[in-house]
Amino acid sequence: MKPISLLHPALLMNAHLQPRAVASAGHPLLNLERLKASAVAVIATEARAIEVLATRIDESFQRACQLMLECPGRVVVSGMGKSGHIGRKIAATLASTGTPAFFVHPGEASHGDLGMITHKDVVLALSNSGETDELLTILPLIRRQGIPLIAMTGNDSSSLAGMADVHLDVSVPAEACPLGLAPTASTTAALAMGDALAIALLEARGFTADDFARSHPAGSLGRRLLLHIGDVMHTGETVPRVHRDASLSEALVEMTRKGLGMTAVVDAENRLLGVFTDGDLRRALDDAAIDLRRTPLASLMTPNPKTIGADKLAVEAARLMEDHKIHALLVVDADNRVVGALNIHDLLRARVV
Image (cartoon, rainbow, N blue to C red):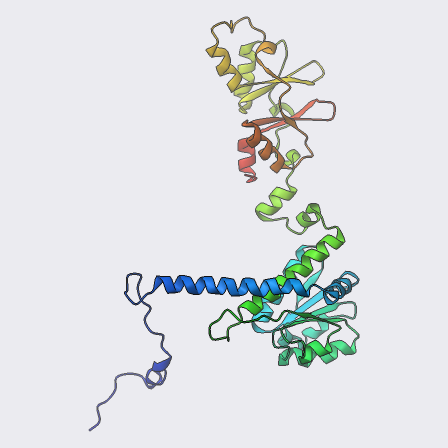
């Protein structure tokens, strides 16, 4: 009588597919030097793949940029598999740097999404082999509409390269994968070429930091590029200020009430004369020659303090405070009148720093 196996047949059938146990960190079979050498070899291989691209920035690259610049619609990027992942990144980079773009999956395009592409667009198709079936299925329909086609492949004699108005050669000497199978260096090269297109177009359009901010309103980047001093400063009665003939005790009361660690010293027309800070107070207390009861505040203040305009970026205030080792700033207008104040805590609350 044959022994009965307690294992499920599916487990027996797939036993050869189960991964072997990974050696632990202290296992003698784990060769750390070999791991390091393998990683260095991958980086070196991919670096060589990118270096080769520099020799291919030629008339084809210029023509591709011209087609995208003159496009009245959008750049439609498409690709399958790993090329599709790279294509999504290229489309996102183009869109955020001034070139309207979006990604269309070639498989979905065959089932209705082809209607997203209009005759005003330009198509950028990615395929390392240049023979991706899903792309070759939809491209004749795209060409029939007279839509310009830019191909990015690793095979200049491929079907995709032959159909394109412009072919960008992103072939690589070798993949970083030791089996020569997993897309590694080839996807890195395609990504680098996509970045080259995006930045070349950015410069050609005169795209500025303000333009970039409009497409990045959220997160720390948006705050750095969009938040102005006027958005975070204290205004009106919340701004600490005293007249030049005020006593030291009056200045201390104002500093305590407003809680910014300083007060502006102004003339009768609200023009800034100086600033009195808690640092100035400490220095006055340390000087035995100063009579704190009788010395006018104008003699204790810091004249011509650092200031900033309300229209400046908040990140500029942070830089100014860091450079001059101060923790508060007064905000003045074109006539040097005090219109606001802020300190480092205001910038921290706004998450500028």
